[in-house]
Image (cartoon, rainbow, N blue to C red; front, top):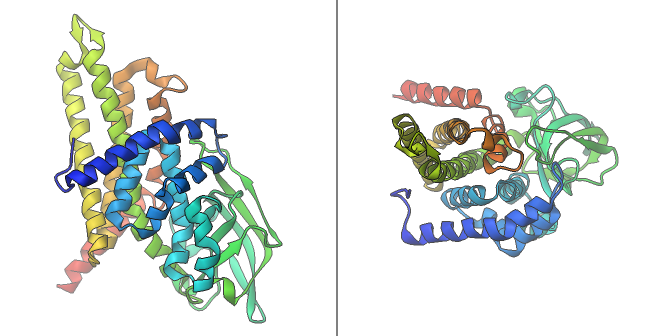
Amino acid sequence: MTGFALGVDEEEWCGRLRTLSARRLRPLAEKGEPGRVNRPLLAALGEEGLLERVFVSGALELCLLRESLAYGCTEAETALALQGLGAYPILRAGSPAQRERWLPGVREGRLVAAFALSEPGAGSDAAALALAAERDGDAWRLTGEKRWISNAPEADFYTVFARTGEGPGAKGITAFLVPADRPGLTGEALDMLSPHPIGSLCFDGVPVGPDDVLGEPGRGFRVAMDTLNLFRPSVGAFAVGMARAALDATLAHTAGRGAFGGVLADLQAVAHRVADMATRTEAARLLVYAAAGAYDSGSPEVPRRAAMAKLLATETAQYVVDHAVQLHGAIALQRGHLLEHLYREVRAPRIYEGASEVQRTIIAKELYREVAAR
């Protein structure tokens, strides 16, 4: 199924990406160790020029990239997205020296980036983070913990958000670029449902100076939100890619699986469910594209549209993959089956980068803000 918003060149590019992800990237992903950073996979993404595209593409192109990779290899999509999430704050707010030192290695897949925002007591409420940046002359020392940090503890550097205290809540947060070899920085991997490289970090007086600040002191929350506003629609694109893969697998299975003197697709209950899966997937896909278009055009509606896109797409993907498993039956529960893999992968995006409940809160606040402004 094609979206009306895409041209022939875009559709052909997406097709080439799906083929690349299945033929070159998936074998590399399968050789990787679950829950660990896959550096050969990152190197391949760099060689293919895909990591470079994360930093030069608009939001729509980023969504097409993530959707297409997710269709053929979710691990490749995740590896690419985490590089972008961890390094985009440097592109957006970093100094020329910071960009020159770190971004070439990220683009080439040599250096691993990480976005360190979440904490044990500050997940959905990101402004409540407690990692302390205590003044030490004209520098700071970071003390506290980060948790559920993608690529931790194996990343080469971290974009870290800490409380410097210029004001209450979000106004007192600063973004720092922290190399992994700083003294006092340790971490450990977490064993997650979907085996992504995710871990916790412990900061025991980690030294950071003015040259490590991303942007301005006290303005770090804006750096975080600018990054998330770009990546939230593309999280939806990741979900759409998984939904499309599950839908296509279901169409092939139900069209060929014999049952009750015919095939599963002959049963109205099955056909209607597949129709609902397809309709919801296409609706989510188009909303993702609309949110990306709003970002690319500089629309003030980006926070609302990005939240809507992530909400609908991730909830839809959960629905589609769940029903795909049901229509496949027991075979989809076997380890190694595409749908067994997608069933574990699809749950996390409803939480990562803002849970569904947070997206609903953002949407409602933006709607009522518009009412108040009339």
